[in-house]
Structures are given as structure tokens and as C-alpha cells.
Image 1 (cartoon, rainbow, N blue to C red):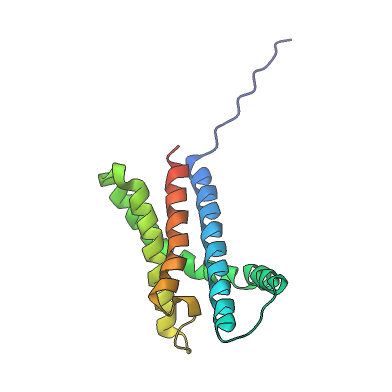
Image 2: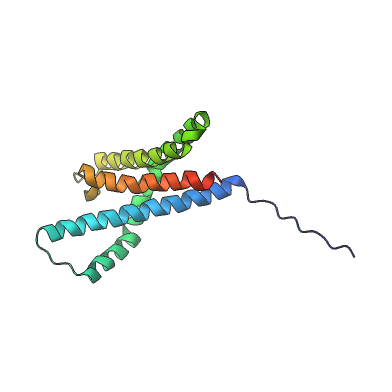
Length: 155
């Protein structure tokens, strides 16, 4: 009897990229959720509300469960347009791939949040994005996730 060599087919490239994209998206959604939670709790502290550390952690956990998926949907809508455009541009400028994808992820997030704000009945849907510092704090998480996606898919 001959020993048969087992030949496993390599994982298709698109499934690996999809998994990495899902990881990056989850990171950006969690980052944005924590930033938003911190922003809201800090606003309460600024007006004199005493919030124990245990409550901060509880609210962060609740928002990761309740808000992060909503924010993740908004983020995905922005990335649906921005990341393919950046990937296309990266074919012309491969050395700038990481920077293009990071920038696109951040810009896509900002565009999606502003689009939601335009149709939401309240002035802004996500309070942290009302002013530039909060918007940049949330966009930095999206940009970091876009950079991570680019780096992990480059291997």
C-alpha cells in the first residue's frame, strides 16, 4: 500500500482578505464605540456628575454590545465605497497602498457619519462627531484599521 500524500488546497486569497477586513472593521467599530462612550461620560463629568470607574467599564461594555454594531454598519457603508477606490488607486501607486487604505478608511468613516447626520432627526447621530476633535478621534480608529488591513493583506 502506498502512503498517500495529503494535498490541502491553499486558502483562496479573497477569503483571507475578507477575514482580515472583518478583523479591521471590528477593531474600528470597537474603537469608535469606546471613543463615543468616553466622550459622553466625560461630558457628564465636566458638568459635575461623579461616575465611578465601575460604571465607566459597565457603560463601555454595554456600548460595545449595543452601539458598536450600529456604528459598524455606518462604518461599513463608508468603507464600501472608499476602500475599493483606494485599492484601485493602489494599483497605480503600490508603494502608497497602506497610506491610501488608511486614509480611505478614515475618510469613508467621516463621509458615512456626515451622511447619517444629514438624514438623522437630531443635529448629530454620534455626539463625539459633533466637533472636530471627536470626529478625528473616531476617524483615527478607522484609519488605523485601514492601515492594519493593508499591512496584513500585503503578506
